[in-house]
Amino acid sequence: MERKKIAVGELRLGMYVAELDRPWIGSPFLFQGFPISTDKELKQLNDFCDFVYIDLEQSRDVDVRPKLSSTSQNQHHRFETERVNLSHKFDQTDQEVQYHNKIKFSQALPQAAKIFGSTRKYVNSIFHDIRLGKSINTDEARELTDRMVDNIINNENAMVLLTQLKQKDEYTTLHSINVCIISILFGRHMGFDEKELRLLGLGALLHDIGKMHVPLEILNKPGKLTAFERKIMNSHPQMGYDLLSTTKDFPAAALDVIRYHHERMDGSGYPKGLMAEGIKPYVQIVAMVDVYDAITSDRAYHERISPHEALNKMFEWASKHFSKDLLEKFISCLGIYPIGSIVELDAGEVGVVITVNRRRKLLPTLNLVLDRNKKYLERPMVLDLDYYERKGKTIKIKKILKSNSYGIDVRKILLDNTLAIPATA
Image (cartoon, rainbow, N blue to C red; front, top):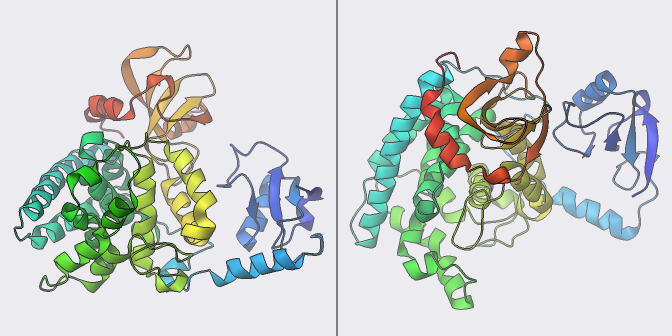
């Protein structure tokens, strides 16, 4: 990698920032390395840094970049043609949608827990009914999705926190609910109205309904699937579509999510091998969230990874599997420290992120678990970093830790302590 040191006043659009003149952790930038694509990013760099190092090879359309080989030019052109022709809702590249929680986290959490419990019971029941060949009640799915939308609009953190209560032996049910919740959260971040959120959520909740026609020995197989087993597994989106396409008044947008959530930007997905602009916005969102929740969950054939690790991996896959622009928005939605992340403070204490702070992204609320000597606290405590900052005591996050660091079971920590959230939160 060839780099060049350059003063921030000389930066231009198209340059690729590889390194800052200070640590990334305290910066306003989401990625450790990014192309300057907006005037807002130029201004942030001017406000925050004196100089940066740019990557000459990755910088585009600027004279500091060495002349591209024909191969590189073809790669650049190929990337540009894979960009998606998204709806106006996806074009908010320069500014994040501004919204405010209507109620406190402590008020929203009990409501969220009730909705989550009801949805869990419903999903388990319809999965059982489908296996027995019975008809299913999609009206209840709509009602539960509406309640989730209302809860997330009132407070984005409560329902999302519950997506961390994952269980390996109930993966399919909880995965369906988690994908629904995170898709609604992302839609809210993108500025979708309530009607759009309800459609998105309905498709997300039922996106894997076709898996109920897949034999359990294939669905829960711990090892690699055979070619025949893979073919059966890959038929679940079409089977889900066939199951619900005759349901009266079931929305076409939700059916698209069910049928196409395994399609990929480069055409490598299934069942139709759709590419780029052929994949509709709702489908792109659920496809992305589906992968995120899957790799952050324990499954029969792999152990979960942390939210931070998952987003890094997804960013590596973006050129083939996802719209990079949309993925960047998803990362912005989840925050620098996504809910469920295990983090270490500058003094050595360790905690689990339980709420994201939209106004001050470096100051989430934690459930503190270990003291500075890495010993478990007798009684885990809630630590609102923003509150302490306003009181004149700065507490900084030093780093994000990997999943299960120090033997921390995020699910157990949250189950044991979420009901003890103080009313001020």
